[in-house]
Length: 154
Image 1: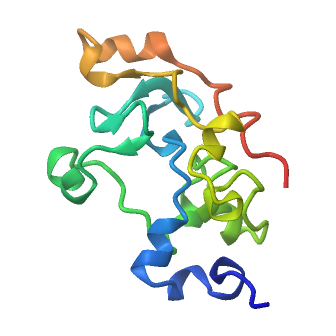
Image 2 (image 1 turned 120 degrees about the horizontal axis):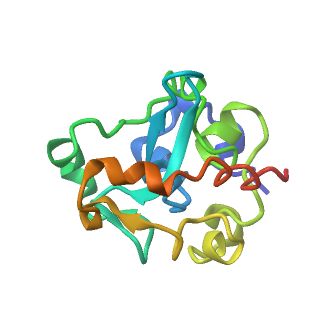
């Protein structure tokens, strides 16, 4: 029996389809973050990008997201080691670090809902930035511990 592509193909050699399939649909990368001016720490909030579909935890306009949200990051293999804020559960980060995919990852489980059942996604835990009256209100939704327990198991 052959091994799955994520175990045999380096991130920088994956086809676009393979690369995109690594996204588990957790929505964690779509959280608004801010940087603490004193410490430089990146702090997530419970506020998600206006393009995130809160039910599916997927971008509602993925193809055009850069036009709609210019500061949206296009993840590439060379960016992974430089994005320290990436959740420990992220498949791209896990593979980059040699940890493989978690059991709840849809490519392993065969079920796109497994990420939500495992409690790794943001489903039901966030609000859209479009719901905020003022951008300054985001600080009221700071959640520095939001990523602490997610994806730490191997």
